[in-house]
View 1 (tube, one colour):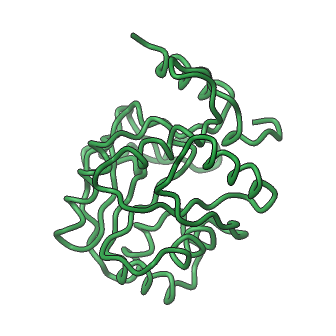
View 2 (view 1 turned 135 degrees about the horizontal axis):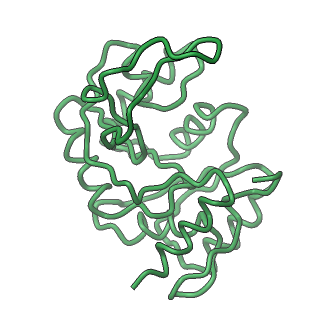
View 3 (view 1 turned 45 degrees about the horizontal axis):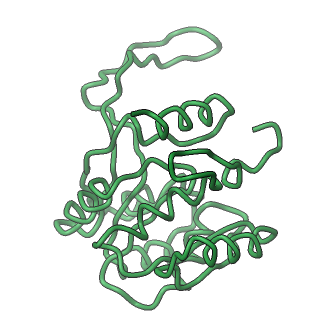
Length: 210
């Protein structure tokens, strides 16, 4: 993003112009399955986040807290800010096209083992490489691309955070590392994680598609 903060980039949609992160919050705000939200942002964005919540009337946001150095530190800050609950959903604010269906499917899948992860099949051929050369072609029929939302029994995820010593790229991997089973819930090709300017352009187009 050339040094810019993607979460606070304004995106124009039929409902008006709002920061990217507002679209993710709005999906959870309007989902009947969600009772309260902990919003985790960079420390320097605490004021902007408070203003956004008030302006957009996101009344399910019960806590706004500063994130940590690592992704898992930020998630832990959000967990600590929540009152004890049965289940919790972790979602990346950079995925603004999350839907109620994904949220509800993630929760339903987590009822089985206490953990679930939205994911989609890998659409392309995947190559394992070394030193710029292909070693082998992987069997993509067993591969999935992980997304958020990811849903967990609250006590299970807290235990994973308490026991984890390695850096984790997502919360599902923390459960896996402790021997837990993470069920797959259906994700979506539209559930884009914004990381580049091109992603912003695509999200803008999708939000404004008829």
